[in-house]
Length: 424
Image 1 (cartoon, helix red, strand yellow):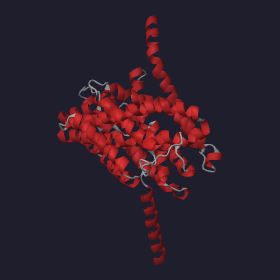
Image 2 (image 1 turned 180 degrees about the vertical axis):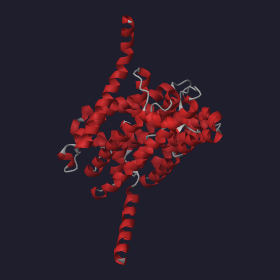
Image 3 (image 1 turned 30 degrees about the vertical axis):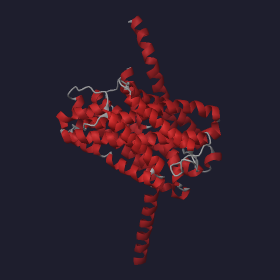
Image 4 (image 1 turned 45 degrees about the horizontal axis):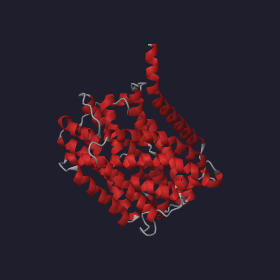
């Protein structure tokens, strides 16, 4: 009996050790999704529509979990990045046009992250011409001079810091019955502004670049197929963290800004506007969360972009490689950061438009990435016996169809309005 008990203890601690060793890609990918663009989108959604857009987090979670699981499984089984697989299976021309759109969105997203740094530090009295260059240099040093193990530990610490949004929401004293009603009985509107916000939330919750970073991180970490069950729980924790943080951001802004008719354009406005309704501590916590998320994502996003471009076209890539071993990788990473910083430091740069439309562009590009993923993950030549099951295919294809439909409605609605007025 004692031996059996000791054996179970040893087995438990062995499994725990393996899980902690595998832990990282799923949590980091999920957490970094709540970046400056995401926080802005959630904040504006809560301020404009109160609790009425909380329902979007339920399907977003289901789709996010299924997509991230497929992503991690492909990385573990093939040992290759997503970009590499797309190039091998769809050709260089298709890859080029997909990436042209993705790079455009990612440059906009990176600029948004540095806008988040500027906005959050402005609340603490630091000018953007000081905060943004310092943040950019810190990000560059972490990636270029560090290695994957060090970077991953810092990223996990950043992920934990994002939980500060829970405290901000609690200080906002929301009406939890109305929160529940936002899930069960939301008021759904059929107009361009509302659909734009729905699409923005989905676009920021399930961003295309996340899939490339996740698979590259799994590959770089060297997770084996026998360790996959631990990687799966890493993905689950990351997805839960993503939705929990998004939920509390929407709740905090709905409970304070929406009920008082406060209109905001960006996450910084939300942090400032929280002060009279939830207190200075909640306001500063919100700003701190924005700063952490912005620096975190300003590191990961250009890193993910450099990863998938280099993978797709056969260049060496990876944080563990030296600059002379992967010059294209580090050059592209540096270039994206420089462009993002340049945009933010321009006087009167249209930051709100860049933020919102980069999220919408994410949602428009996501179906292309999802279709590529679903086709490949069902290919036995690539995945062997680890192809999708029926449920995963239903969720994956349904999400793709819905996103395409929402995108078409969003793009067509401005054209339909003038025609309808002629007949009214």
